Image (tube, rainbow, N blue to C red; front, side):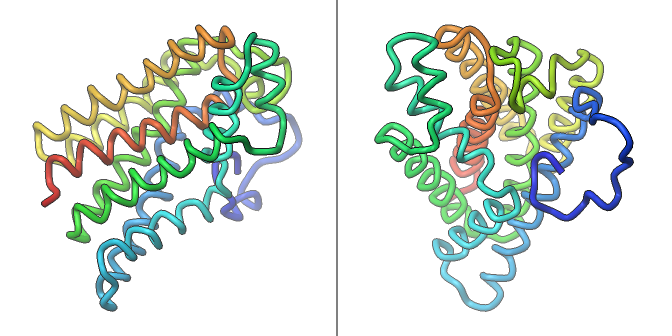
Length: 241
């Protein structure tokens, strides 16, 4: 319900406020669903004769439809705020502005080009499917890294609603992503994905701490996209060509 537009609300238990901190372990599981559907779209596209580049565009487009562009919106707002604000307060004010600026537009374009280019370079549908699942899981694990490392800087919004999850629940989610990488990729690419993917999320945490002193929902979304870009780049370098 939080991370996608899929109609799963009918299965939820209502009657009280959602305890999102208890659900963070399942964030990488959402990556299986979103990445898996995207990978299957690429597979279908190649089966009907789509060129690799066009298949990659459609695969990524479907994942954005499934999430409602949630993470990309966070990336654009974060880039605008961090790039255009002179103080933490001003940065957060810019991030709340629904209008997109030059930093946000550039960040969006680059993130799309990197992911589409990586998927097109892989070409083989089975590897693309595995790559999108792993990228979706490790990318959403990047959210967990920031939740563990940083406090929320706003009293409202998605970041604050999740709170600071327990290390145990977040550790389950991180562990699921690590296991998926080891199972779906060869050993050396899997280790590279784990190290560089979580490294990218850690860098995002350090940048967010230096810029605004913590995280917001936008920063969490930005971390997911950046981590996905790194993961897909590593996989493309390992299997592409």
